[in-house]
Image 1 (tube, rainbow over the protein chains, first blue to last red):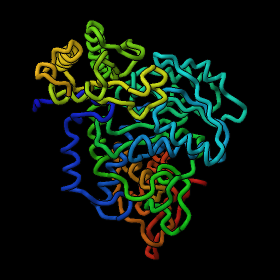
Image 2 (cartoon, rainbow over the protein chains, first blue to last red):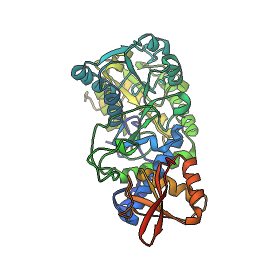
Image 3 (tube, helix red, strand yellow):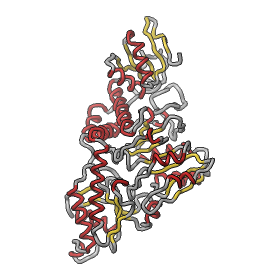
Image 4 (cartoon, chains in turn cyan, purple):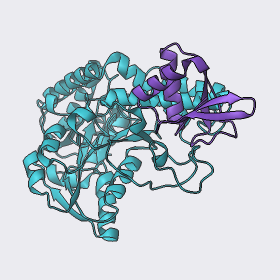
Length: 393
Length: 81
């Protein structure tokens, strides 16, 4: 087993984090570590300022003018649940696509069983593309929401969310930006997005336990959780204003301190620069994989139209074994299986066996991509150490 | 003293006032002030008009401008006026 690590699992969580993230979190714990918005002392005020500055930084990165409409959540899943359960609280009809993650599919399934929500899943093509016109055709008078991911977590295919919004008109649009916030330039207001769920620990380069939801003006979402907010403390009724309404209980301020450092790094480097870097790495990856006999690459396979998520299978090598050998023999971390997106795998033709996903990040180097290609080539050719050692593992 | 709807508004107002180089101090809301939020900004009385203008321009949700008297704080302006 090799000690050196090549991390190609950034679609699951980014690694390493941005410079300064760990330091910001350590600094918060050692120098602040107070509850924001609750107490009147200077440390509480300092914690409140961290939340505010992070809201401002995230809003700036996502094209949102009012940072008070950015709500922090523990992850994208929590943000999606607030949006889905809030928008569909009285039933109705929702349109989504076959490329969605279980963080959309499972809440919708539960809403269907519990509240009679009717769900139309528009099929994407094997490249992961869903035509905006097809989404528009699925609308009904009682459609309350359209929910689409901005990019597939399996094959990276980027959805034209602006065109989707143009096609659906006044029907609210929820965008799952787990794979794109920080990786692809986003102009939430310019695109007309009504709700946008994002992860803090993926391309925003913050720690796990951070995420959020943008709620556009005019969208009313009841809270899933009620409790202390530091505001209207005299009342037993929950606040009806953002961000407090959707943020009950002590927030993950230490995580948000780290997220702030991540977002500041991105603002300084530029999301467009990260995008260029990752697009070039994906191009190298696709070019190299295309020359390896026995490797099948799924999805759109056009670097300009996808995020840095490349899913492959290798003929004659089970996906779990492929991933394990990449780890144990080559020190390469990838994610195999269904990636919490069985519907997407059905769409691209890899269900139920799944695929191995290679997802470089902002700090991945061209040399690491080259080594990953060599490793895949060695395994695909059957000349790897497992065979040399005389046994299949 | 300016009171606000939420701590987000307090911190936003503080940030904008500092950018405008106006003095302010984040303090716990005095007991006699009715406010949605537990923190408030103390400002200089002479800056009141400018503070309100900056807060409104930044869409900060403030809920009262209070003047301190010997007898306590008195509401002198609210955003609904």
